[in-house]
Length: 77
Ligand SMILES: [Zn+2]
Figure 1 (cartoon, helix red, strand yellow):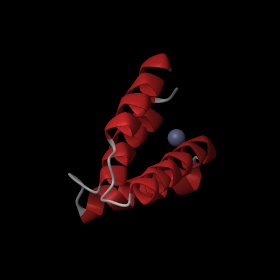
Figure 2: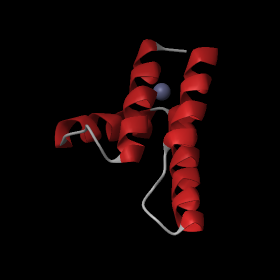
Figure 3: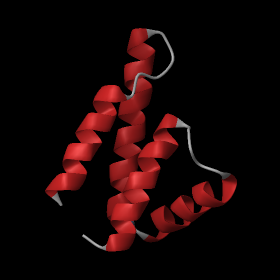
Figure 4: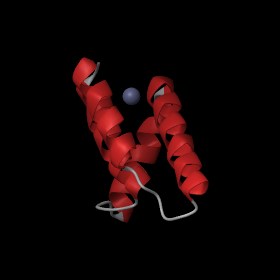
């Protein structure tokens, strides 16, 4: 896995949480995702899962389990 991809995915998971990212960081993630299909697919899946979990629980996103799972994925690369 490329270093750039790892960085993007680590940031993207902050993006999912909607915390810790300013406009320029969000933009740099978006640019990478436009160029890198594997990352786009991975992030897209995580975002949908996060939204689904939030909807099922009927409350604000509870990303702890999503975070833990993404952290495991990053370790496995
Ligand atoms: Zn990538």
